[in-house]
Length: 389
Image 1 (spheres, rainbow, N blue to C red):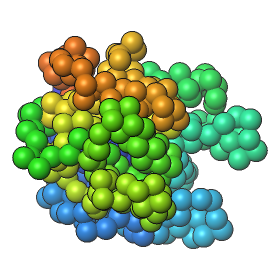
Image 2: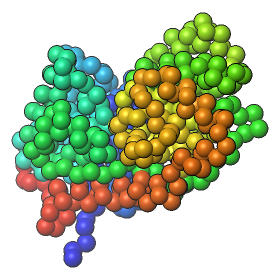
Image 3: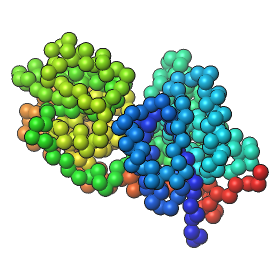
């Protein structure tokens, strides 16, 4: 079998925060170490000091560089100028693979890749939704538009990558049965993430780690915390760790309920630092695809209490006692109380680390993604050769 040649791979996504950014960082590191040339194109207007430090971590692996352009969350006339600017930047990098992540990243990668093909340049165009547009409802006008756009873009897509069975099934239900190549490749975490993280001596009872926006359920966390105190008949402590557009509103919610001194708020930080602050991690999301925070929490030996949404049951187990009904703070409080009052609850409820590691490994994820890249670029020789211009 002929040796596969190094590829030039460019990842496109909008906001460098959360699970998408984690996913891309893992692929960048794994594929760069395998000898491929990697680049990132993302939004220049989001992210802060914490995200800048994460970019610094992977900069040595970005031989194709880090390109940042303004990319708005919602569709706007400025997208036309952004697309043209993005196309010129992508063309100058001469990628073999364009991998779009999230709705906006998927649009940029597939349209730019298709424009390159018009100019007789051979490039593979991939898309991973990471939830994104699949959270929309088919019953709303905006949802119908977004989901129809997803269907239309299949004509410009060489492969769809689904990060969990839930995402694959949701795509088929909302968008339609895919008319292009698909692959199910689970999110995964690295070897260094499968190390227990002990709690500090001043640890709190519960932590929330993630974006501060309603989709992720911080308001449910605050509500359930108050109900957990009532169920147990004693005061508790918690931390909300993260940044987001609704931070001030959640702070006001806590103060109004008299919880301001028992629930603290800290800015986004590395999860290893956050995990040292509590044993119990609460993931109260209203919608998810395959959240990294659940995988990272399990790898660190934490107790996970999570909404039954997205691919979370595929990790914790469909019948796990750690799963709660989404949007239901009473159910969330019930389980939060059980974790503190029931001896041996963690050992009986959490999946074994070796079982998680066998399926949700970044090495396996990167290997399977790279195999797909080679299949698309050149099924016979495993390499991309641009056509003459």
